[in-house]
Length: 196
Image (tube, rainbow, N blue to C red):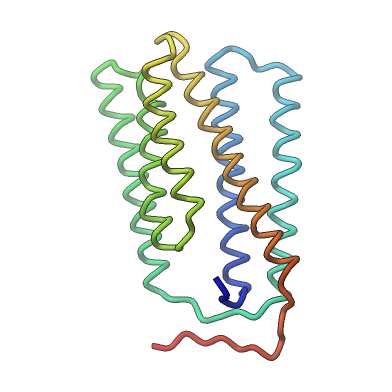
């Protein structure tokens, strides 16, 4: 890929990493709660992870200012909103439906699978292969934990793996984006315009 690095791309990677970092932290805290393992030490470990990933996201935002920007495609934003809306509707339906059927123990696994599935269209939309890898890993993890973990530990085990996979994806994205930023020289003379 010889495409010119843009502020849009860098900011997009930072935003994605920010969400994965935040939601990964929530999943990890949920896992600790489910396993009755919330202690000063475990919370300090989560805080340390957030303390590494969040600043890296904001560093990437700052780097974006050095690069030329291009006009955003409004259809991309609309498609992104539709995909996320579908994800949250699916999560709500699963949480409500499984609760009514007294299948609460499977809710976390189902939501992990939904989160993974919604990354497939996002990977295509943003042309970002790392999302495919994360999607596959999350869907596989939802199935593996369902088969391997005892029911009384299923929620905690699944949530822990989901949180770690999201953090791993965020760290991968940040590392790849940082490498591209450091190897690219911004050219202020470039003015990228998207042709209608």
